[in-house]
Image 1 (tube, each protein chain N blue to C red):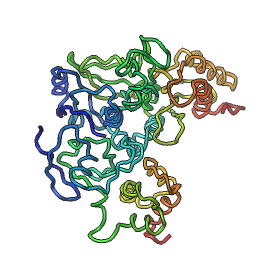
Image 2 (cartoon, chains in turn yellow, green; image 1 turned 90 degrees about the vertical axis):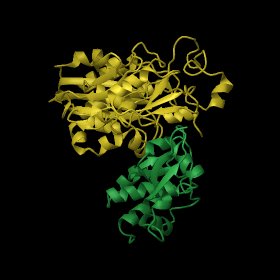
Image 3 (tube, rainbow over the protein chains, first blue to last red; image 1 turned 45 degrees about the horizontal axis):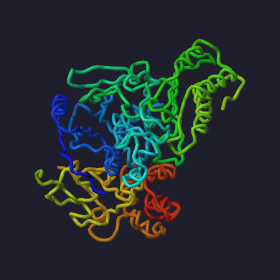
Image 4 (cartoon, rainbow over the protein chains, first blue to last red; image 1 turned 180 degrees about the vertical axis):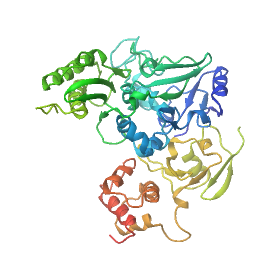
Length: 330
Length: 156
């Protein structure tokens, strides 16, 4: 499949990139690893006349302690054994992204901003044309929840939940300078699969910052999908926390693959802080997460199954963080 | 039209006209007639189009040709020694790891890079390393055996 003609820009500094982004008529896309953008372009999904390739911007690359450049490749992080030992849950999530070949090109920033997905959107041009298109590309209606105002496309990155439970922040650069925000503040929690994030025009991710508290924190990631490789998450659940002798010192849960944005469940895990865990409490927590999420039928597996599996994953995640005396929570 | 693309392919410096939107796979197959690299799904799922860029296995169907500017691209045509086959290719033949053969170049590129970086991988590591390459004929068993055989110097 050939791509539509576009102009490729290759800046070398963040400042040049931001300046460039201001003056491109007709709109542009950032090109990070290209493993999500280029398939979408091949299917003529929201193509733009300009691409700004970020691969030549040195500042965006590589890791230094808890700071990871947005253009650092997932494959490089996977091979970074010190990184994996420091952030075990994050390493699990990275290792579950797509396939080893995709991870050689795909970047951590690209995974955070991966396009939301829906089986009425991720289709070829003739397929979409025959149905009359959808809100997210070329059309004016949603085929999942028929209405004309809101898109339900699913957030499908694996890395965001794993970073969210570690209280990661992201540095953003744009026309008004740089700012640092908690990772989840980046995403549109009003739940629109088109707008997706609160990044302003011309703003790009520079780096991810992991706090000192994240280093060595017990954490894990579980992914639900049909095939054990390539597939995007139908549900991804990240957990981090310290459970010592059955007592919860800290606990965070976050999920992706269920709604239009990744989210944490602090309102559900908060009441457990300082408490002694029991099998009953873990089951209650799992059930409360199941009731809190609202997947729709726009991916391969049925929403009710994904909700039931989030409860299973919560029980397994907590069990892995710290064994519960006298019980098996799995 | 942008300046010609300058890239080294299998050790040879190449200069080729190249629109910005040209995909590396198309450059290789259509412009340079290097048709050993296969177009399978064209969406990054199947691994048939795997080449190396600066030694790193890369899906050429998801790479802009311009991204390879000034770098070294290795294709299946460039992976063999002067004559004959490399260890992985020979093991694929000996173990019957090829049926229709369409996926084979991609598997060879992936497996050769694996054994270069990790000369004695476990079976589990092999399975994981090739999980981005699809084969619709073999059921993978023979492919895994071939990689194991190549890793042990062709004696197993």
